[in-house]
Image (cartoon, rainbow, N blue to C red; front, side, top):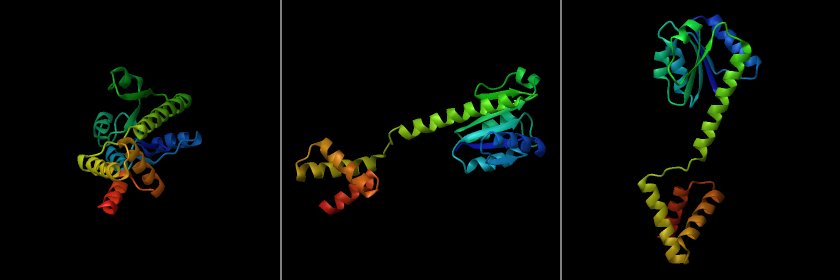
Length: 181
């Protein structure tokens, strides 16, 4: 599920956008009337979409964009005059008057983009710090010496034990080291 936060200075506008999104199958995490409220909601979320008006009561959309945590995208809804003056390159914009079809398709595109990024992050190999890497190497070295395994076999053994026991490889390596020493 993608987190969607709607921010407009008028609560009725924000609720109207929320209702449109919910009718079309999107889940809206929060509806806010100030940038500060929106930023407060974003802190607890990993990533998502912020749908905002041009000028909020406490900040402009550019300030909101600059303060958003990494992983969030901004969809600006503003007049053609505002958008015609240019928006930052990583902000997606829709002009008023808003067409429901455009809003739904744009949000859908943004959701799919975020899902692809999440999947890419998940598939990226985990980077271990030096201490964790040395624990795994030491466990492999002991397995290679005592059980006459190759480095690859020792690695696969630790991996399999890790999966079978439901622990990560570092914890499994620590268990092997404590049992073998």
